[in-house]
Image 1 (cartoon, rainbow, N blue to C red):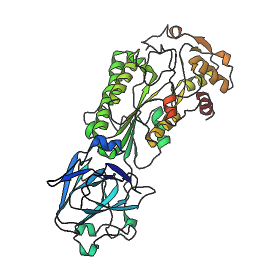
Image 2 (tube, helix red, strand yellow):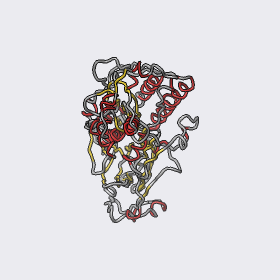
Image 3 (cartoon, rainbow, N blue to C red):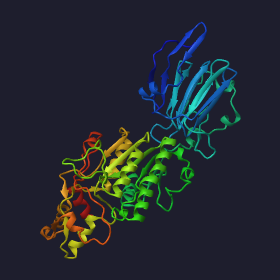
Length: 469
């Protein structure tokens, strides 16, 4: 008997992400009405905004019709249109809750959200039972599925009607026991730009698990017209875009301008479209160059962008595109140092070779080490931090490039007085090619990411570790 007048409410289960909803059903002598799926109300109660793309209905003539246990690579919202069912769910995902079981009855006043990888099975308790389910992917023969035998002794599901007395398909009878089930792995994570300084740090941070994929320009062309079909994108949960055009001076040339816009805007727009259409979380790395550097304080995430040169303009345009993606993190950073050619390695080489450099002293900011960026990205993903823009640089007192050069000389056992200050204008006075304008203040405020639970390391301490290794 359907219960009328219940308040919309949520019941958690022992299986992470498997959530039961009590639904308000309004009835009278004519019948009843309910809101079977109401995005705004249900997401407000914590239901994932899972983006359904298909609605299916299963009609069952007889009492005892039993289906499952099937685990699919998509999320499902299951509710009863008429009749009553006993439902059994078994966690078939990799992880500590693999094999966990939950059972309950569903009627028109109760629905359940079944996350990807949780096996589901239903036994009808009344004739002419129909249940409906919304799913957020279309069936595919290449998708990853997993199955469990309905009679598995480990799950030990207490079926209301014994299995030997009900109608079960021959296929369901042949499914494996729990010990032989292949668990469904987590959604894939794609890292683009995997051979760059940040890409190599992301490799070290995220490791070589089977669901992590690293792509380079040679293995995935982000500007290809076939990008939308280059992967089964519904299998991906996260894309970390570490690919970018970063030659700030060359970007001021005609060829450089074209290449910068292709990499930092056109390719970013393609990734944004894929992420939006497939419910993927998109992590994008931005730059202090989106600002003109005229502020007398550190820049916050809310400050309006005002780029000076082509590179900064392309990064600002890319940020604006990424901001439209429902699930996105824009990581704004500055003065990046990692495994590759960079300012610190240049200064170290000059010091060792006995060269006394002149270094720009009127640009101020903080070094950011790629290990810090990679760890910060993983923190935001692991903690499901609110989506949006986060500044992520080294912490500590800002310094000029000349100050940093002197610190490098000192830490490598050389006289820091060998470094001479120079203005940006003086440094580039005899440049033979175009020079991109630089922001004089590149210091970014770190309050937001610290409030999200991640505290970047002091850039001076990181520099000392970097030089020691």
